[in-house]
Image (cartoon, rainbow, N blue to C red; front, side, top):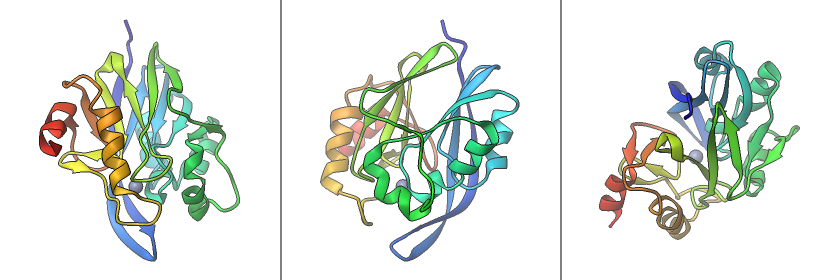
Length: 203
Ligand SMILES: [Zn+2]
């Protein structure tokens, strides 16, 4: 029986790609117990993240993808907490747009398992919004962290560089709709949803 819990905050900043900049609110998700945790996405402010982490040991900084609004402060957070940044290597071109002079530490792959606080997060590679987009499935917690792959109301945006609309829908059907219907979906922006609700909406 795991004692892991999910903590959450919202961080505000900007998202830039293809020469446009937008104001955005990003979700920060922290999975762990009183002693240790992992951080899912590192958007705009290390202080916003540390307010959720507190004095717990951070075991890893997990990135759902490398868009700047999800990865911008990952290196600064790494310096602060001394934990590896984990990213799917297919997002290297996006990572390099934001971080030209430093790399992440460990590659994620479909099926990678991350242990924290007596529970496990499993990586689902879900390309489409970004080539290296991943979701983190927590079977014992009954939830999945989807980044910008699946939102309340449907798939993430695919209108910009390195995105593919057919691919994101295929990823969602193959990986996310294969999860139990009552799985809670914790998204990269905005409110939670569920696999059942999004399955019904997408048809
Ligand atoms: Zn994104």
